[in-house]
Amino acid sequence: MTQFSPVAPARAHDFSLSEAHEGLASLGAWRDYPRVQQPTWPDEDARARVFSQLRGAPPLVFAGEVDVLRSKLAAAATGDAFLLQGGDCAETFADSTADRIRNKIRTILQMSAVLTYGASVPVVKMGRMAGQFAKPRSADEETRDGLTLPTYRGDAVNDFGFTEAARVPDPERLLRMYNTSASTLNLLRAFTGGGFADLRQVHAWNRGFTAGPGYDRYEELAAQIDKAIRFMDAIGADFDELTVVDFYSSHEALLLDYEEALARVDSRSGEIYGCSGHFLWIGERTRQLDGAHVDFMAKLRNPIGVKLGPNASVDDALRLLDRLDPEREPGRLTFITRMGASRIRESLPALVEGVRDAGAQVTWVTDPMHGNTITSSNGYKTRRFEDILDEVVGFFEVHQAAGTVPGGLHMELTGDDVTEVLGGSGHIDEAGLERRYETLVDPRLNHQQSLELAFLVAEMLSRR
Ligand code: PEP
Ligand code: CO
Image (cartoon, rainbow, N blue to C red; front, side, top):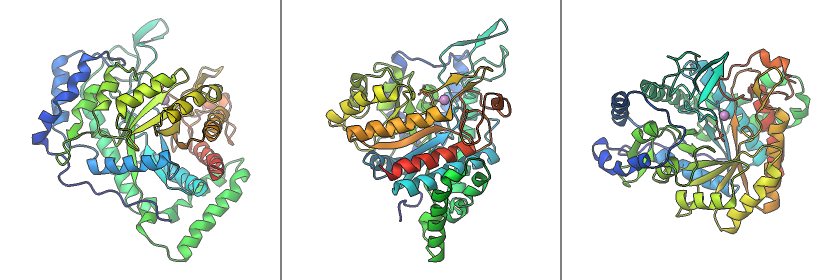
């Protein structure tokens, strides 16, 4: 039953700042490459000042932890583990409160308990948290009532408020991103390092959920899980794995100024780690082979994700593999596919087969969110729960047909009872979106929808 080693202790000699700067010189080369989705900081001196402050700040994550995560993602690639990555589309400074962070962690831990039962393998738990403050945008400008202003790029860059002053990029926000990430991580480490993550408490999970409509469908599975947990409790099972879980942080490595400033040289290996989060990914909009993001990420030792949309070709995937994982190292590269429910069954097979036939092993993860965004008739950016689920089903089908491994889920979710995604057993309809629509960017599954999805995926995993 044991699956997780306790939280990996950070090696004391992980990063020595004095040695660091020399080894980091090569990282700045991204500035010579074409770059997209970067803010134009209005004041270069201010940017440089912030950059050097961040360079001198302690790392947020440690080499030892990052290395353990890489090995867990390698296990997910072979079906010996399953990744659950979830959190906001965009974290905000205002919502980085203890309550909201706790609710998110709890949701991910509850989903993870359900998925573990279905998959009978360890679930690698990862938040889109403690660093997810910057957003790629499809338009540089936004127009409201005839007024056109620069688009909101996440709290790390500018303010959501629709005024000229609010939308000016401010590098001081990078410091706030660092500090908010640090306090979020502090809470994450506390919650997952002790009683809060106790699996025997987690069975309180179905209390909130059972009250909801449409629960009956999951009652049997929930009862089985409860019984398994009670059994362990009754026999006095009392090992660390019940009370301590590894929980990793991740975000899109979008703002290269920030990522470069947070990179550190591991004094033991001499290698460069991105220390802003354990797992960093390159988005669909920034994965150009000759672009700044790929050049930068190729130099980091972290496990790296790349989003692949419906227009990604096999050639794109293989060239990304060559650039980002030339050694074909297990756990190094994760492809996060986000095709859309209507396209996954036609677009994913070629990619999966092409990578398989090239003899490469990557971790395949589905993001069933970003290909399924629609606008409701009352003007909300939303998604249908049934489309999200259908993309997950398609993902499993395609991998089964290709003989490859569906290795994980990448979700936009929150632990609160927001109404941003249509459907689910709570039957949120278009009018219902008005009740509690809070996201600043993309719609998130609420607590109940997240658990419902976990139950449905657990059923699929049990047949994997
Ligand atoms: C995201 O993950 O929030 C995102 C913008 O995704 P993508 O790069 O897949 O569009
Ligand atoms: Co999003």
